[in-house]
Length: 330
Ligand code: FRU
Image 1: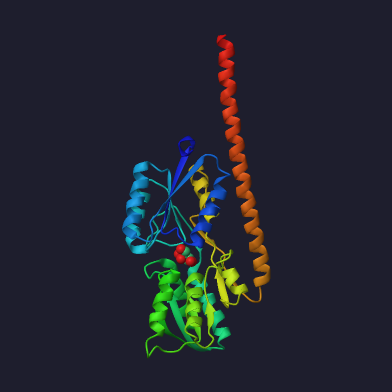
Image 2: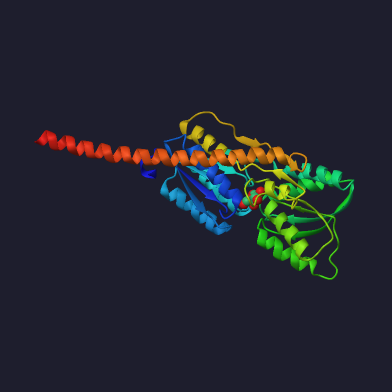
């Protein structure tokens, strides 16, 4: 019950309907179980900047003690985050950035580094020569811009060209629809490799390529999420050739929130490690992530058991007190 907790955390999440965001939120709740003083409420901005601003203001009216925010797009969300921070609410920015440093802490993977590493990886795969079709995440969001910038920089001076760019806006269906439209144009240039800013869009591109019987292509994505529809499985199935692990930082966000609320010292910039995943390391990655998934679900089962034990204990204690009072009066 959030009313009984000492500190209220509000999390303004840009979207919640994909597996990567769900993983982030699960990590948060798992970590939260270590801090009985903290409650967490998530509001879903559904990819809508105006709604996200509205929801952040609502958190302020509710009197949250700390705000976590994953901004849908940087520019529209920057002023409201600055305003919250300047009003004295500690703000933790996760995954997507704002255009200013008026926040308490940032937590996320290094997207520029992912772009650079992806570029090097692609240069190797294509032996320094070839053509790329790039599928963009939402243009106004920082991971899309940084992944693109890193890629461009590491391809500089090579004979690899980005011949087409599609706006997938981070969504599998959008990527599928736009790619299909694009490929059905008579004069669409050919390409050797698809680089998608995330795995779901890249997996969608592979589906369309097969549907249209394109000659075989290479598919490189980002996220490397475990689970049946994630990048780890897609590498195992040969649907993706490579992906780059992009941690959600959900657990770290709660850890830093707890430090801030306790008045402990904390790092402002928390940059999480990324890594390439492909056929060469997929077996070990799959083993590890399967193990984590199992452990995660047993942690959740344990949390539920503790909750229900606590409820039984509380109702029994209530009964005992009533019983005691009755005895006393008698
Ligand atoms: C999930 C997602 C990820 C991507 C991240 C970028 O909503 O689209 O696939 O890596 O957001 O912010």
